[in-house]
Amino acid sequence: MLKTSWSMWIIGACSVLALAVAIERAIALWGFAANARAVADAVVRALLRGDLDEARAECERSPSPAADVFLAGLAAAVRRGPRGAAPDEDKIDAAVERERQQVNLRLRRNVWVLGTVGAIAPFIGLFGTVVGIMQAFRHMAATGQGGFTVVASGISEALVATAGGIAVAIEAVVIYNFLNVHVQKLALQLKLVVEEFLETLHDALPTATAARPAAEPRPAREA
Image (tube, rainbow, N blue to C red; front, side):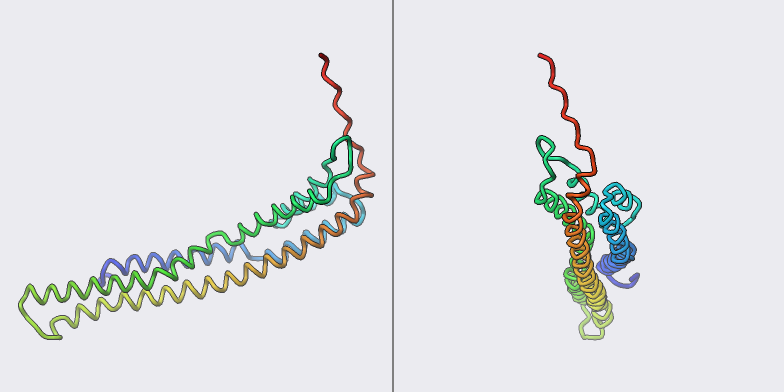
């Protein structure tokens, strides 16, 4: 890098950035499916017993992002409608779906960086090569010496930038494709456990809500 153009420093920074994103995503996604399955099983068992409070407690104890999705559904399930009416199942489904989409966005956080690095790294390397060749020919014109041997060294150093850009692009694209497929798989697994949770919640809701005391209406304000 010390013998090449400034473009190699940019390419090196892109390589470090791609590795940093890959490590950060690997840590963030590690154990996601297992944790989601564990909290889903615990919540479903509590719902089968009709215990909404225990289901909520299981979610609060879990570190899984899936627990946030279940909490949104449980919060909507205990929210009474007008005049103490039963909770609306459509509103429960909507609350769960909104939170699930938020989790999907968090799963894909920073993955776009890898796609960007994979797209621009070859062009950065090519630009550095073009600038290096221009400088080599400019040096030949300034010294008045001709021949390929005069510019061979400068051109060979300039071509290193193109090779470096291609290498970093391959690295970034491979990691991007792997993470993209992995995130899609995790999103599908999350959707399956959420659908199982909703089915169990809807079945247990009449019994569970009947056992919970309805909120007393607030007294009317005096005029």
